[in-house]
Length: 83
Image 1 (cartoon, rainbow, N blue to C red):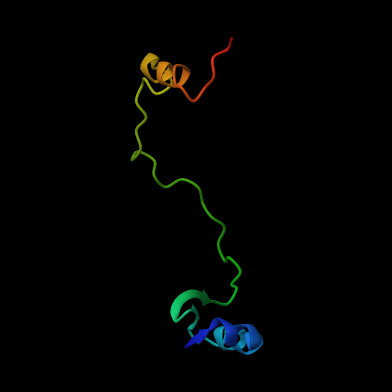
Image 2: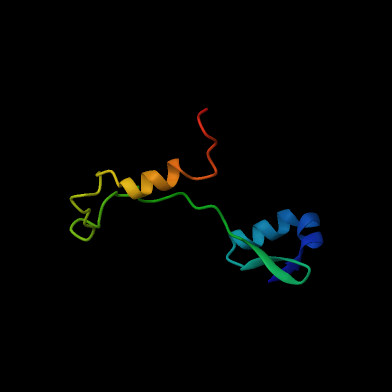
């Protein structure tokens, strides 16, 4: 179901009930889809961090200073001189 913004403002309770009952409610702005109204659902399972072990590799020089990058920042005209 697509409704315009004005209708959504005046009938939010009805639209929320329909969304909770499974209706796909899309609110349009100037005739173009703008937002989708979806019911709130409690998260059933807590997020488990990780899962990419062995797939991401950090180079041994990751923490090394790069003089070229440091010079680009320090000598940039964005930063005023320290005089």
